[in-house]
Image (tube, rainbow, N blue to C red; front, side):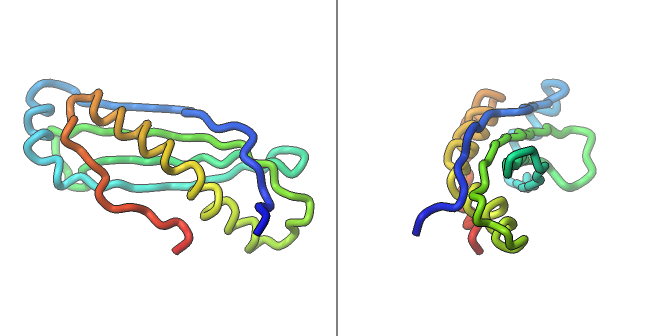
Length: 133
């Protein structure tokens, strides 16, 4: 099956790691297993059948706590959609599944580098994400 889109560019649009102090760092190091990974995907139409797709990964503690760290990366992809794509459902599949399946290995590597370089080298993202499901 031929692809009905092409990724023209992909880049880290925004990246953030926040650990306010050493007490928070020590607490987070002991409690990082409570942290959850959230994914948010948004898109913005550009001209000439192009779409900017922003994929945001956040790794955070959902419980209220003074001692916490916050990690976030926004990864942007500029996608050229084939002229033949007219159906909204097909466009949604391209943005939410096909593009994500292509960019996710690079995005995951960048996000893990952020976590490891922020002092949490033991972090692994065990669960592989299947965007098609």
